[in-house]
Length: 478
Image (cartoon, rainbow, N blue to C red):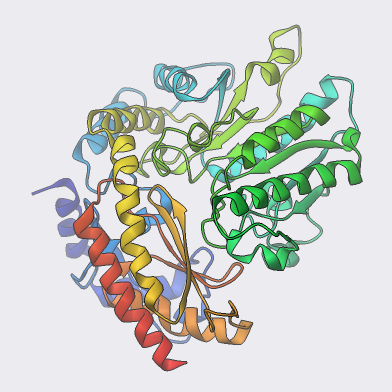
């Protein structure tokens, strides 16, 4: 019996499905969820076990994990060796902070991340998750410029519809107004530029006489990058501290960078003395086929934020990896970065991360993604024959499928239609059909897919077949 099976057996002895649902209704406040589902007498799916790329709920039904939990479980569920490493570390040293002290796991993990990161990104500041990593980068960018005698450089630029986390600083960088309005006023200084949604490029104001194809897409990338320069000039270079960009933007449905985009962004940031932060909370550790997607797209940022797949979710951790240039002022005298988290660089999490990265190397997971990503894309592109599928986009093991009312005009769904389509039908229908993924309406309606890096052709076909049946039914319901 595996560790997860033992846990399920033990859990089943203490609580029935009905008891769990009642306790959830009475006490559990779920994240990013409408509590009315429970308050109105509904039930919540209760996931009790995972093995490989399969998860099971409390009724015993199995599902293909098409989202790696939440872009997290890259090496797959049920890895006994990761659980064992966590237990061993907890027995030896369960906790100690890295506030003026250190422990071996944090030291070794920092060394490993510095080795894997591009360029001279050699300094690692640990947190417990992605939002904290972004918050750290935001604060560090502002403080860095103060230390350079340029205190007016405090603004940050990010892209429309981009998600960068929920802490107040990270929320200021997030480019989704609906996620911020209930918490306003948020931290000031966040400004937005167009994203790299090539499918909707004309609606963003991009005009080209170049025929459809790679040259046109590259031209769009240059146009989108130049909007960053335009914003820096408009706000004033002496007021802008940093640009925050995901290598592949998640929110809105997997927007990869057009060819040359990041090279031009890097050039702009260098020209105006603006820091470039790659938010790789999702894209790091194999999701795009390399340790960091910055490497995939051929640019070196000043900072990288990362989290999710660093431990494949077996224990929470995050990190902000910083270049020698940014770290240099902190080498001297009494200068210190008065910022941190109690559980940042937690011994158990750091030990698990090190073992998880060993699995990546032993099983060549990065190479696997690079090899099989074209097959995954081709399989999903079969869905383009459906009238509801407008676009399939992404990279690595990270794809989005945009849903439309009219393929010819690219007409999208209005808010009420999107509500009925995504929340009213698709989310539950896909899950009932055996696929855990994400129906997302932050922007135009999309289905997001990011399965564990261990899946292959069999699972690609399974995903396509489930999507085909469910999307066909959704279209017939319109």
